[in-house]
Length: 395
Image 1 (cartoon, rainbow, N blue to C red):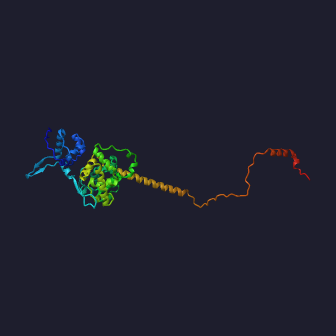
Image 2 (cartoon, helix red, strand yellow):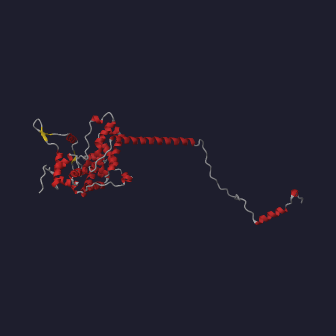
Image 3 (cartoon, one colour):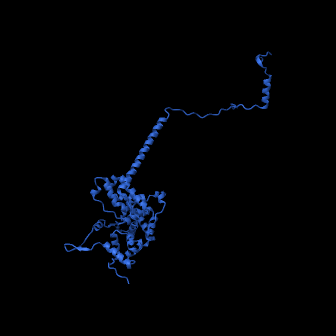
């Protein structure tokens, strides 16, 4: 007979809400209890119930996530005693996005809560974003958006190193164009679009560091979901992430992917059908939303510090500036050398030679034959010696 724990176990739906309110993933909660993430998923869906020691540990952890008990106030009404962590959790509460009306044949409206894996910190105070220095505004935007962007980009490429590189490169581009980004109505959306474009670039497959595969997630369900996402074409994968993962509306998703609303709806429906064919339990968009958030949270985001990102952008700008200056100097030097060595007058070209016919070929002297040698010897003997050979002979 199972002993009932001292702390009561909340209903299945309340278990998931408490875990998400405590900013814990299923993998983290399963590690604390000592079970697999799939077991925690079964407990939260109500398909199974914990027993024995797991029941006691699980109930105690959920009770700890509930927070302090309600205490009566001076007016006689009960109010909760909020700690600093609770106030911070309330500030970064779950954002609920209601998708607008879809076109004919498109997906139905979905109320998709944005989980902590994709949630970004609330926007900074206008005085902070419009501070005296652009560096402070950039650091604030980076601190708010970088961790969530790393998780989102991981689902697009399936590689942690590529996700970190894409986010850093996107923020470096934002720092290079900071006056434009600062005036943008949605700076976070500008950076997100740049990061997603870099992560989905087809040129990464030619890089040596990306030819080696990254270790897959340890959980079987997470591994299957990641493989299914990577099988989708990049536009379909990005549309599914923006709509069902982040919670953007269909018009916003279509605008960010540079497609029409009808095309974005078709991509979303096709992506959902592909995922549901391999994982039938994810046919519900709400469940798919939570599973995408859990898959993105399997690893700890290790985003670089804002000064390092700004320094990398400035170093790259200095490098290309110096390279442009060096190329310009080399071009000017080459042009000056060409002008100095070029001829100042016109020299007509020498016409090609022509063959003259009727002239015997020029023959070089060769060795004498036997007859020629005999004739030479006889002539030498016949000639008189001395002055006589110079005397003319009268005939």
